[in-house]
Amino acid sequence: DLTVNKYSSFSNNYAEASASGTLASARGGALYLTDGTKAALGQDISFTGNYTSVNGNGPSQGGAIYVAANALAIDTATFTQNKATSTAGGQGGAVYYAAASGSTVTGSTFDRHEAAQGGAIFANGGGTFTATDTDFTGNTASANGGAAFVDTTTPGGATFVIDAATKAVTISGNTANGAANAFYFGAAGATASIGSSALTLRGTEELSLPDGFKFEMLTTGDFALNHNNTGTVTLVCQV
Image (cartoon, rainbow, N blue to C red):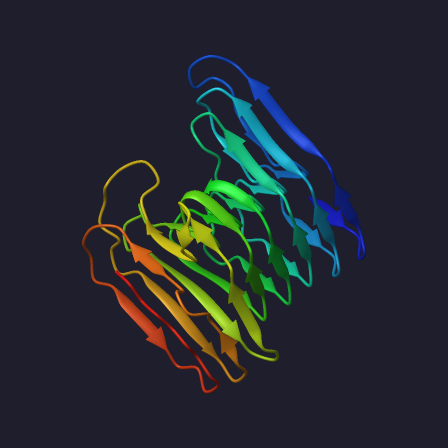
């Protein structure tokens, strides 16, 4: 098990690899949480300028954190300018979840991250992922999901929850492939049904989504866009 103390800071750490074909991999520039590792992260942790990089076609995942399994709770963390890059394209500029179901992020910020898929977060494995009182600003994906890529390959689809529970939440300036794009639901490597997937917006505080905010899904499926926010929401949904 791993315990990270309150106020810890992770800066300019990296995981690099280089090999031909798909043999090389780089995961978790600052933290790699292996299958079976139960991690307890203290409050007010910061991750700045960490990255993963592969000179080849192997996976580059989780510029700051790679979570192999088990739900991870992140509380009042600051993620800034982390990235995941590779010849084939990185996933999760800040955090990559191999099994995202049950994981939560609360009171945190994701600012100016870079990856091919999921500029800030790549959420795999289906189930429900919840981001409460958390801002996503200025994150960039060269392919899909400027703020988050939600992989729906797992049967049953996936749900990504944005909850403005106790503070105003801002989702702004996130782009993919050069255009406004915040959340992408689909399969990372193949065309597949999104199943019964949902982007859920809720809370009692204001949730600010700028003009041009874009949500995308891949191919067919029973899709529901749920909104039970009692604050103010501006949403442009282009599917």
